[in-house]
Amino acid sequence: MTRGQEIDQFDLKEKKLELIEIAKRSFAMGLQTNSGGNLSVRLACADAIVIKPSGIGFNECAEDNLMVCDLCGNILDGGGKPSKDLEFHCAIYRAQPEAGAIVHVHSPWAIGYSDLGVPFRCSTVQSVGKLGELIPCIDLAPGGKPQGAAEVEPVFANPETKAALLRSHGTIGVGRTLMSAQYVVELLEETIHSAFAAVVIRRHFGESTDEELGLQQPTGFLKSEGPFRNT
Ligand SMILES: [Zn+2]
Image (cartoon, rainbow, N blue to C red; front, side, top):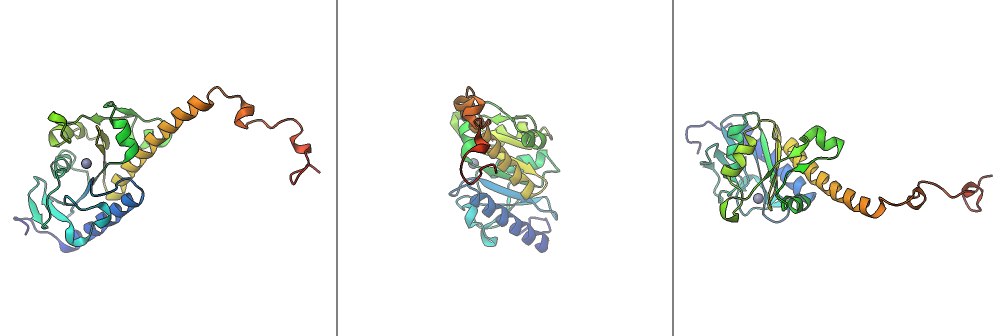
């Protein structure tokens, strides 16, 4: 099964269970619906990863349908169909030796923004602190095809890059653990959603007075009749 690599079964089981937990968490949060997206985790015992195969939804991940591959994409274990994302997962692990896990999702707010094809500037204190100021947007492959290793690897060759948008496709988060990689895509989705809310709120309330916004109470409020009357 291992093509010369010894796979520790305890390590393998632990990583599979972790992947299943994070996949279900991402599904429950609406970061990934249907059978798209992908996630993987590096084994501690070998230069190999556990990854979800093609056609299996995040919510359907189970110990017996996950695959084990080496960092060149060769299948070491598992009978499913390798995902087309396998190529760029392997490229990121090769480029960033400290990367322990990758989560790639098709989350709706991030996809909406990524259609612009430009980097996203983080605006919240949380996102700037955890993701950096500017999130790169990786263009589609030639012919409008989904991004592969050729497009993704140059961006993640910078070890500081932990998050990226994939134009008209989704996001990638990299972390030391599956949970930290999932937090990256979760925070990026939340930050883009917040940025949209800020634009709408500014447009509707930017010219409003404090009174219209409810920031000032009318004179005599405390003397009014009712349950909160000032006695
Ligand atoms: Zn995808």
